Image (cartoon, rainbow, N blue to C red; front, top):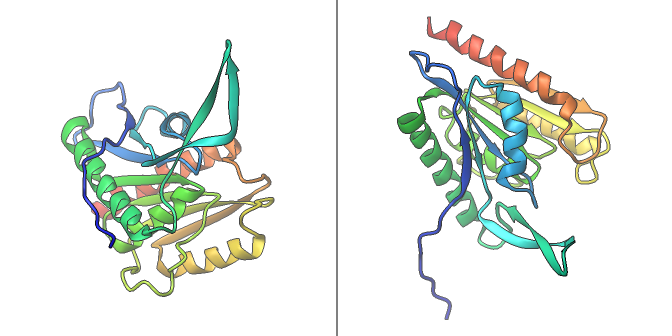
Length: 237
């Protein structure tokens, strides 16, 4: 007979606050999430380049840790295996989704309360596995997120069956890879069609790369965020 117990666990993240004086309306907030086998440091490096010192930046680390099989390196006389992190598996996936949702809400509250972030201008940045988790949040809470940037990821597998997903006021920038070993061009075109059905706006781009974060896209992402912020300012007048 299967039973369970619950316990509190620490969720680790990195945060950077702009050095300038906080504007009256607060700073835009960028929450980044790495891909499978990544960590908070790798995504923080990318996210801070995008923010350019003009946003509060948070990089959350996945809750599931594991040794990467080919990540062994020699350190002196000992061998150390690199640890990677992920967001969940198909085993009781609904619990991983619920944890992701609650952590995002908690991070947004913390960033507003402690670091001067503007809760109306929250952006999510995800790579690979994190993209579907972010889309689950965005389309479950259609008024919570201003914009979401997804790189080399897909929509949730239950896109058409889950009644929780609704059209959102969230703007979407989706970056796909032309040589992605996980998602074919046909799959990516289907993602484009599906996202257009529910996003407030969709900018869908292909980059000539494999399944990796294309650093050539960083200026585009920065400009896209700035355009969405400008659009939100105009709408609030």
